[in-house]
Amino acid sequence: MKIFFAVFCILLLSLSVSANVDYSGHVVIRAIPETKDQLELFNDWFSQTSSFLDFWFPPSKVNKFVDIRVHPEWYNYVIETLTRMDINHKIHVANIGELVRQEQEIIALRRALYRGKAIDLENYHTYEEVMAYLADLANTNPIVSTKVGGTTAEGREIVQLIISTDLSANKPVEFFECNVHAREWITAATCIWIIDQITTGYGSDPEITDLVDKYDWKFVPIANPDGYAYTWSDDRLWRKNRVLTSNDTCRGVDINRNFPVGFGSPDGGSDSPCSTTYRGEGPLSELESNTIKDLIFADRGRIRSAISVHSYDQQWLSPYGYSTAYPLEYAEMYRVMEIGVNALTATYGTQYTYGSFANALYLGSGVTTDYYYEGEGILHSYTIELRDLGTYGFVLPPDQIVPTATETWNGIKAFVNAI
Ligand SMILES: [Zn+2]
Image (cartoon, rainbow, N blue to C red):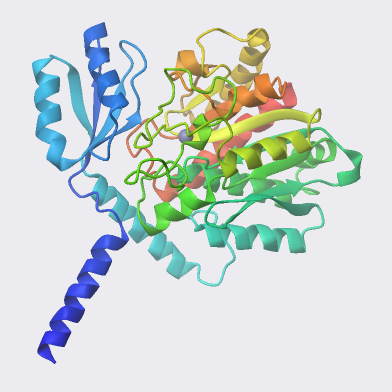
């Protein structure tokens, strides 16, 4: 009996350990390459991305920071290398494991407080909870419907929520996709909060009523369901989808590197299945990217704006991601980005930068935003990188959901009214 109990305990222990990747002792190091040689080091590391070095903010140019999550086993090597090469660096996040644990505690606490409510807008939710909320909204609100755009490799539906007073009127569409990168939880939470604002504000808030009377609003709150579910069940910091790749030990394709425009450019995506920015076997090889393509195609000629919601670094970005060249209509894009960012910042003073993706952020090839613009001819196609500036990075505490969503929605309303 004693032996049985001991085995049972060990089994329990191994279950609790294997259920979730433990990030104890992992840190995020922020470093600033000030010379081409220094930048080259980060590019080298980035091209060999593994589970030991996870670039939260990849190398882009001289004097622009990089954020690297470092596994404890590699900590000394990284610090020694940075010191030897005289690269300016600091510990930006001290203990990711602790952040993740704190997040779990807050989520659980709020869950206990809000038991029985369909959704708590100040908390993060599982894929199943979000789907139940969307279905409930569609069942109870006459201007809301849902559309299943496609199904993932693991059998989860990719659902688009549609807010429209008259579907047959074929109004211009404001399109959003959120949480295409699994670990960016604040993006789904923000889109859900905006959905709630629009659906509860229609008929009572004059500005929202006007915006819904004029346009159809369409959201894919979780564009990467398998990856998102995996961040809840196994690895909070997973980014890609969960498909098997040609490499037995590495799974997942970065959906936001899998689109045809700029696909496969040497910078801005990786051809290694182990990289966090693995672009996949070919353009649109993934079910998720195909679904987004189909949803966009279904509204061809009607899409007034298409927004890809990401985190983090507080930026509003136009095409191009795959090239530092500026689009022909960049002056118009810049004008409306400025209006959006000014309204966003006016809310709480949160500072955003704006510009073209490749110039303001880093090269990203095969991204949705370039596809919407160049592939589908949608002039107003943007990527918005939500809070924060790296203090919490992807593990943004739940108490920042509503402020983040509030300022973002103010920016979007101003932007939509300006185009
Ligand atoms: Zn992202």
